Image (cartoon, rainbow, N blue to C red; front, side, top):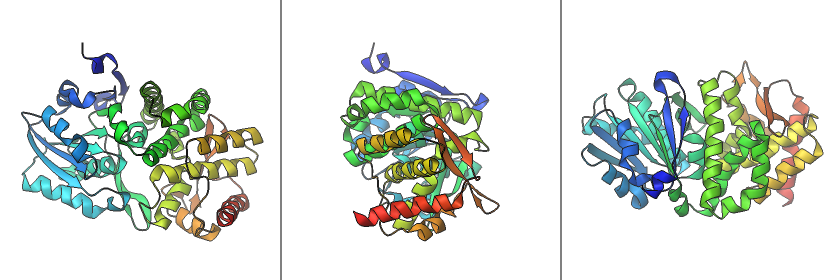
Length: 371
């Protein structure tokens, strides 16, 4: 039997008739029997970017032999996650006369997945799509759960739709070509699962972060599988983020403010989330919800993952609050934050001391300027 199949792990996101598998393993790009059963029609549009396409597009096209296939190659970068970029996908679909039975395949990181998913959600009011994530961040987070969308200059991911893929194909071999900065950005989202709901996993990560950064195949596969299992459980319980799914946004309100304020692409999403999680932990500590030891553990693992531990020095408390106000978790003018009650425990709260939030923002600003 093929070694790739021997090591294959399969999880299921159980959403009734919209359930789908997550395949995790090495060499999966060369296993058409995993991909093609999830393509109901004959028309397939593969969307990738200028970085990923030269590495992996030919292998996907080989797996799609026999289908009517077209491709769109996007520029690479968060700054291109816009409605204008989505329009290039619509144009290709229309030029090739793709109908409602078509399938879009997202081959790339989180930006490609989000854009392609949004195009699929809105083309002819919804067509099929498949996620083939090639970054760690996309494999453990953005490819699972059906959140799609694009950015606006005034706010990140403010335009989008929920649209579940038909399958997720996470080939761990693609991580071998990921640069170190992107790898660390993905580790931020892995750490997040330990912080919000899986204390045992957090403890495992404290011991194994160096092996993840060294791209140890066995440890990476375990981290991806455990992260996807955590996310799948949350998505099944709250697909449309009416409750507990918002916990997956730990650090994101702070992080999105950094990304938007600095210009999309200046900070990687995972870098901004890593710093945002530190800020959420700092506020949780000021509120008395976590202790000194937990805060130290969070600071230590963030540094171990080679993630930024300081905010941009240009962003003072007032600037942060301005950008944080443009957030999907704002309700009736009140900013809700994901905060920690323990390592492995989290809540969504608008019942926090606003002055302590400002102290957190002031402290990070002061430390950033002192560097």
